[in-house]
Amino acid sequence: MMTLVLPRLALAAALALASIGLASPAELRLGVSGTHFTVNGKPRFLILVSDFDALDTPQIDRDFEYLAPRVDGVRIFATWWDFGPGRCPLRFSPSAVIGVDGSGKGVVRPDRLARLQTVLDSARAHGLVVDLSFAADTVEGMSSLTAGPDGGVCKPSGSAARVNWPEYGKAIAAVATALKAPRYSHAFFDLQNEWGHPVNGAKEADLLGVVRTVRAADPDRILTISSFEPDAAKHAGSVERLHLSALNFHDFPRGRGWGSRTATQVASFRRELAARGIMVPIYDGEPDPSGYGKGLEEFETSLMGARRSGAAAWTFHTRAGHQLEKRGLVDALDPDARRFLDEARRVASRAAPAGDLGVN
Image (cartoon, rainbow, N blue to C red):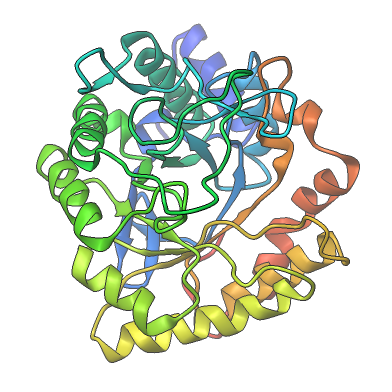
């Protein structure tokens, strides 16, 4: 029998990784195979958690260490709001990875790009995939949205906001270029959060230009665009015409009983994609609990319905991750959310369809 002797420091590092269930940083590669996401080439049903403000939190490693045994990944924003008081609490953030210069061109902020890379490195070290989400409306100067005297940004009450889509696409492409290294192969992009919402007013033609620009910069990146469009034919058609890597939907309509509707939504999307001959994963990117009566029970119903109906990934969406400048997600989560995360993998396993290969 051969005895393998590791240097003391290497052995200590290996034992530390094994003790907390982490994958080696060299072994986290996200892919797509038919209707599944894959991790290191093997199909896996992915559970993510909203950690939108991760780029601002002071304790990212502690948060990821907590999440790693419980979920498969996080959804974070490269462009996220700050918050303040008043009727319109949203604030443009100088911490967004992309911005607009004095001539109106989209730019990447070097310090914030470096922070994003640090967060992605930490996620990789803890075996977590990343939904890296972008939004044009959150970037000051990228759209017609403006801040009021108190800094608040109000959502448009009339016509939709106008966005400089070509510059937006170029800015994301610059981020994609900076992330082309294999060490960032665990991240996929949501190029525009909830396209068509009045805060961005995106149309397919606008987004097609963004997709083409980013795809040219990073041909291998998994690209999605999230939408709350519940019409399966319209949504699947957009995925087809925009040549997206997955169908990324946000539960809609929202309201009491939303969790029980997830299974129906996923099944209808799967049928419509199949009718078009499109084999891509379905990603339930944002269920939402606010005021819906049953709280976390709805999340369990939604998660089980998503998996049983053929979804490839599902996100536990909590507003605890919205504002993390002074604390981490671990401290922001309430006890109910912690209990749900403790059980999420078991819930998903119980809901695995017959013959399903995507195991956590």
